[in-house]
Length: 481
Image 1 (cartoon, helix red, strand yellow):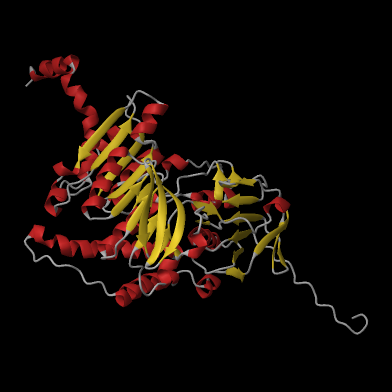
Image 2 (spheres, rainbow, N blue to C red):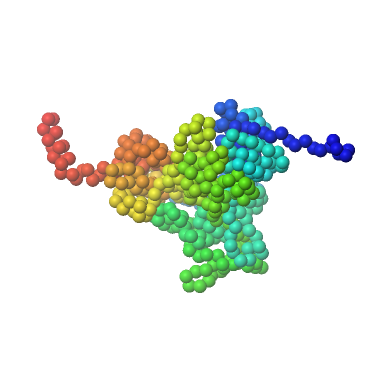
């Protein structure tokens, strides 16, 4: 003590093997996996552990919307069709139950029992080897940034004068907006769900419906949305928002000038931007840009102590916004714990649109493959020729595989019910380097939707039936009985 004043002692530095910044889905998964190997782990989070609740709340709404539509369509199956009567309070309760069940695996208490030190607060780099949280230094052997991304601000004049919602707000709403205007093609599934629940939803997709996906899949989804009476505006950029007597007016730029649509709320589902602005990355010598933290194919940053994964990672990890999954956690674990060389491949990560019909894809689209390689073959099998789809009365859609002349799989798009599940064998095949012939020989349940994938793969061999040499060989072998 000096001059009668006691100086507060500086908190001791923590020295874990791994410090994970961001306790979203990826961050928690990485921390749990590392702790399972007995590795000392610190997990830092400034907000709720478990990350953004918006995606799960949206998925719950989509499932509720599907049930509502099933009631309307019951007449096709000889049942009494009825118009659903949504109960806002019960819809809210269902969403909260889903969120509560999910959060149960991410509580600070559970993480602590697994040996993970959880620190709540804002993480900032103070040097290449140190992060501080409220003045407490953490000097880890390796740092992993998993802070995710948030919806980017939308440049629309007058936005501050109207009611604006984001996907993250859905979990807390006790009443859904009566006339929502959903901005962004990424919100197609959400707009469809709201329309199915009886709300007068409008979808504004300035970049087009399913930008970057297969054109045929976009056409099928467009047809379904219009049939369900969803108001759709494609290729029209929002110019300005105005407050009106009954809500708001949104002015769109069209090819012929301007058009005005009305609603109660704007629901923004546009592009997302990495959540990295408060980390002081420059002090750690970490390069970054608008796409996120620059990483190489091993997910390492320009600071060799630091990795970045998930939506906050840019550079070699840059991926489409509707990426449905990645293997970043496993790759970082292999690199940090076992020093194994690893390489990411964003093209091998599946993308999913959770609409009905669902659209799932991996690798190149047909247009991208033609531009990149030229010589390709398109293998296609429609669900109209699949027994399970016929039995369910959902025959819209297809399985489409893009392969080269040797049968190497370049990309796959599946449009139809349960497409997010049906894409799985193709994901495995592309990651394992299997050819389309391996898929054709895979035994799959004959009466299942997955049989459409096998049928598409088998069509690769269709040209063999007309080859004269093979026909002569078959004729020769017939002589031997």
